[in-house]
Structure formats: structure tokens, C-alpha cells
Image 1: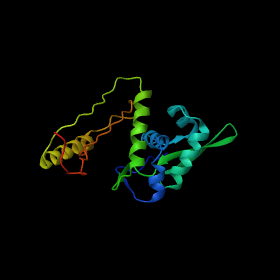
Image 2: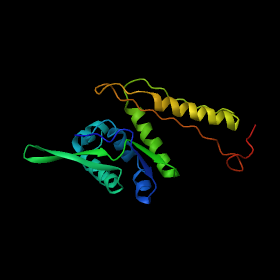
Image 3: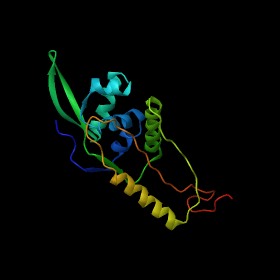
Image 4: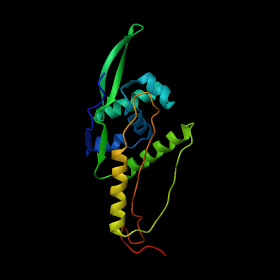
Length: 177
């Protein structure tokens, strides 16, 4: 079974796509399908979610064009379908609060289920706009340049966020001292 095309990026823009991304289980399914195509049964075991729930959430992701069928195989008199992501990466030009909340919730669930020590740090720092831009570019380059090890190695999640805190008068407004 082919995995998604190398380096493909899918633009998130439709209401259906935003709705599909607004649930932690669907986010976790997208995480799980980033490694390779999988079946409902395997995904249910991997995520610790019942098969009916996985089936429902996959249907929502398929209808939004974020996941697609990737073949099938005969098993014990039935057919088992494989699913894969439609693209390797998603680009959300205009994030919505519900999608961001679902993403962070999904990451929290993944961190909680991990049996290996993890790094989770939140730090607020004062930066000039120029330094913030340099840091954003450095972080993006670090993520982009990190090469994956061969299949069979553990999959690690990586979430990088750099944002400007909203002040009392919105972004860019005066910050409390």
C-alpha cells in the first residue's frame, strides 16, 4: 500500500475540514495515519478507542477530504479496509479556536498515554518583533530539517508553537509589566 505522496501539503479552508479538525479523536487519527495506512481495528487498539467511534470519526475525516481509502484485504470471510491521510501535512492558514483546542487536547491525550518520559515546557518571553520572527524561522527550520529514522523506530510527536500573547487591547497592545 502506498503512503501519502512525499511532502504533500493540504490547505485547510472549507467548513467541513475545520469541523473535522475540531475533535481530539480525529486529530489523533490523523497523527496515527501519518506513519502508514491502517485499518479501523488497528487504529482502535492504537488509540484505545472503540471501533464504532473510530469508524464514525474516519467517516467525518473522509467526507472532509482529509483521509481516504487506501485499499482492502480479505480477512476471515470479510474485507478489511485501509485508510491513509490525503496529504502528509495540513496547512491551516486561518486557525479556528475549536480546531486549536482539539489539537491541544489530542496532544494532551497522546502525552498522557505515552509510557516514555517527555518534554513539555511553556515559557513566556519578551521578544522584539524581529527576534520573534527569527525564532519562528529557526524553529520551523529545525522541524523541517529533522530527518526521520527508518520504519520500525518509535514515532514521536512534536508540537511547536510560537504566538504573541494578546494584551488588554488585543495583539500588539500594551503588555502588563
